[in-house]
Image (tube, rainbow, N blue to C red; front, side):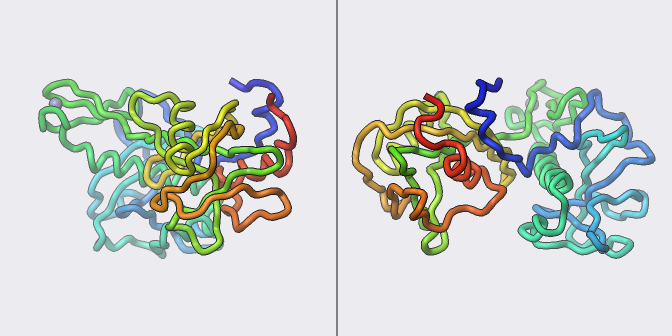
Length: 291
Ligand SMILES: [Zn+2]
């Protein structure tokens, strides 16, 4: 629930929100004639050539060798599905299989989110064919996005991995850090996965302590973003510096420091929640807002 102007000031559109496509349960017993299909192969999708390229396919009967399929959701009364084809499947018509990174520039945001959802749900189907508890075959629930074991009743849901991401403020500076995976000069905010048994606030404090050795306080939720590589949910916070000197571990983090508005290093590109946190600070988070 929004807590007044503070969260309202955080303007971020989660590119991978699939709210565009709403699952309706129970799902259709059979895919309707007018269903739209997303064709998945491994961790990518096929697109149909054109200006612009098109994500969906409407003639499933033309396709040989469908390995398996999954219901994704409804939009304006039309059901959307994903199907996986084998690597050597020849798809009728003019199609291509772009590098997943290029999908950003090829598809509008709504369809980009559906493409990512299709890959995730197909992967969920592929990796839950058998029960993790008794090894029997799993079947589609049909009542929710889940698989049910026919033998022992175990229910398995798609995995979602929560991760915190936090903008730390100290006077008119923010803390930015470099991971060894980043390009030279590039810095971002602190992020990390939530551990079992941990609150989000505890995860923020632990990650900050582990990665840069300082303490934070006044932890405030700003917004979130599903990040499908492969299954993260990024949960964004602002926090204030509370004490300690920056000590980096030289493993996860190889450099860290306090930066003011006039001296920012290279930062994440637009569309990421990391950048949205920094932009929020640049635009709205000045001074003592939120206290
Ligand atoms: Zn079982």
